[in-house]
Image 1 (cartoon, rainbow, N blue to C red):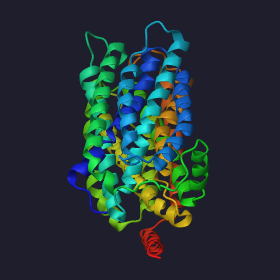
Image 2 (image 1 turned 90 degrees about the horizontal axis):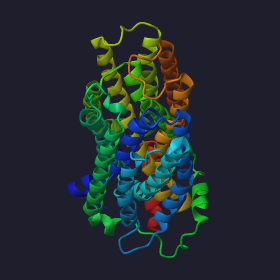
Image 3 (image 1 turned 180 degrees about the vertical axis):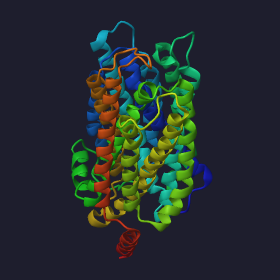
Length: 472
């Protein structure tokens, strides 16, 4: 397969933005909005997102298998991008605009229903999209370049959207904190919907030229059936490296999900940052992402992928506990001191670099494991493998939000609380829970990544054996 041209590569990369729009909304604002503005308990908010994630455990493998076996004149992936893209954008309008006077159960049901629908259509879009990324190249290093472009574009969007929100939608207005005003979230939802629709359409249009070069489903294979996804998943999990990668990604995703879901609470109440200061956080995030973009290709040529992932997990584990731990130990100055903001910026940059490294290198590693799977089973399972990856990515917001919601209720943060009004013991509990949960999950990911066996030499051997089998 020839290398991608610039339009093909970057339109594919831009196609990751609808998922980034979802993450930006759910990770940064949904839990805060439904608990602090709509008055829904943290446990019910987290439960709604967890139940939606549980539905993903069924829908993701179904869509993955369906995508692998789909036969159309437009290929396996692009028809599903069309079916999933537009409804996903429309559902962002509903996420932040529940009808008035629903009551707690009504608000819970609205959040649950919209979340399930949004995740379902996003699944139909994003799984074929990520599966296509493994098909765009067979080269060990170019796969990292493609994954790097996709993850970087998604991360830049994911960081820019909260910054735009804090700068333009959630500012203080006439003495009222904009983060506690419901109408501001409606406007943020409109912006999210427009961006998701435009980027999905650009991806579909820009990658239309690769359709003829992508692998097609086997015309002699049996048609798709509802039992097939579960058989495919069983076959996929027969691969030890795939099991370890999925377990590590789930642990890392939970660490990142808890950390980012609670970050608005930590920033607003624990550190007492203003909306302008929170908007300024986009600078270290963007710099860390761009630094990862520049370095990961070179690092990938010098080091094997599993050790890089293990180091990223260890860095996140240490970094996520250091600053909060220092405050709990009483060795930091009071809130408002410039050092607090500077240290938070540095800590955020380190965390972003670690998380971007995970996204880029793990996507590239999964593509290599797919080759190993083909050698062992004589089957390509891009859709199934990346369905598992999509589920792991969604666990960032699902399981992370569930645990974060329970933490919010346990520590006792009340709706519409203003910065500086919460008891110090509550804030200490919030910091301690955040420290323990994120640190332990990141360390678990480190253990999993250390056990993966897929070096550059292993991949060269696998590719050689596949080529030899193809010429027989």
